[in-house]
Image 1 (tube, helix red, strand yellow):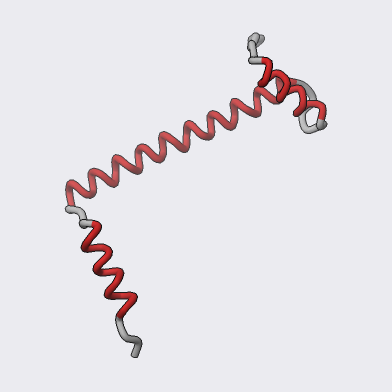
Image 2 (cartoon, helix red, strand yellow):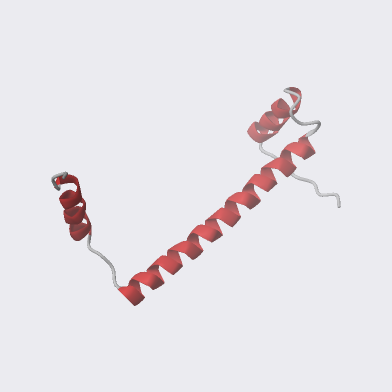
Length: 83
């Protein structure tokens, strides 16, 4: 499938520099690599959003903890005398 992509001058320059360093054979490889990174980032974002929804559902179902109570418990653990 042939697709034309118009890049800003800055992105075009960057893509060409990537090719000149020898890491990529051509600008198309640079664009494909960039799209793979974007795809991975999008998948991570969706996964993170799902985790946030699950955490919110759990907090609604099981209740939550206030920051103050968590800090108090942490302080009691840190300050507790060792035996």
